[in-house]
Length: 369
Image (cartoon, rainbow, N blue to C red; front, side, top):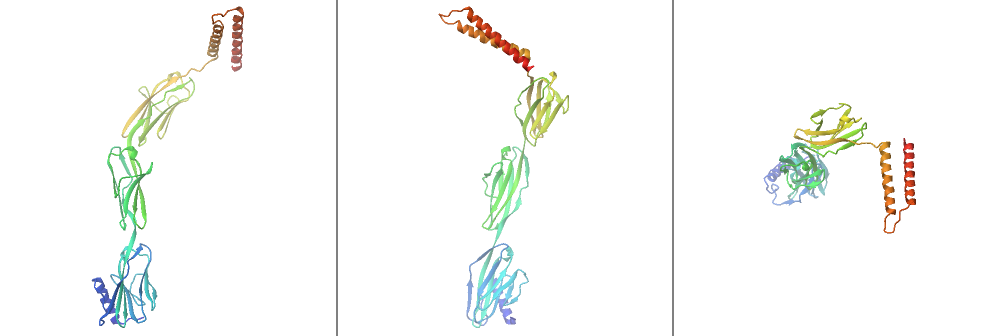
């Protein structure tokens, strides 16, 4: 429908009055109605529909926003492609705005002209915006004992609330209800992944910060190792440190290098191994493991000692000694008591038992070797 020039002028006047917060009256008409609808709340990115009632006697109608005329009847005045006409008939006049943004928030007015009066219906559109973390501390590396300050700033509508928690190595909420998290004299136990959460009525935004705490090495107490001559022996040294420790091995004051005299050094993370593939007499003794990083060092001592493997002669001696002790014990037991009588038969039985046992031991040794 083509609108007369006077109606366009009337819309312009109404728009100016709306901007100034004044009631809208039709020129030359003593009666007008001004209605206020409930606020419409819409989320950013959604679609909002604006509707006002019509009547049989309506001659002209228009939708206006806070800065321009959007629709005058069927004629679209807005250049915004997101705005379109939905319904225009005797009952209603409805337009819609797609992909709503913050710039669409504000007052909208539907102006309706009849033969007898002008009616305006206003509604305020409120746009809710999901929270968005706009400023977040980068991953941080500090030395143990330093003061740490983390920041997490967020925007949104309504204003989001911000909270912090540490999620590794174990989840734990932190005493902070705003965008700043202060940690005084940080310890190695406070290292981990920190999670910032921004939340409002619309949605939630979550981002994380990695906090690394450097500290000097501490070394587990070394365990002495016994090895038989000619066999393989392994000395182990374990260190807790950030950054990871570098290892050095010493025999007395002499540093040992990898592949030195048949010795292999293997470092894997927090563990270092010193391996002797064929232990010789000269390998026995005291060894020192030193773990170091840029913050300090620690050491521990480990003794490689000899273990003597039993031979056939030592086995025979030990077995004979055991048999004799047992035989003597039996003989002594038989002769005890106030009425006990020692005779030749007891001595003979003891000697026979000893001989049999010695023969059995000799047979076992022969079968073994």
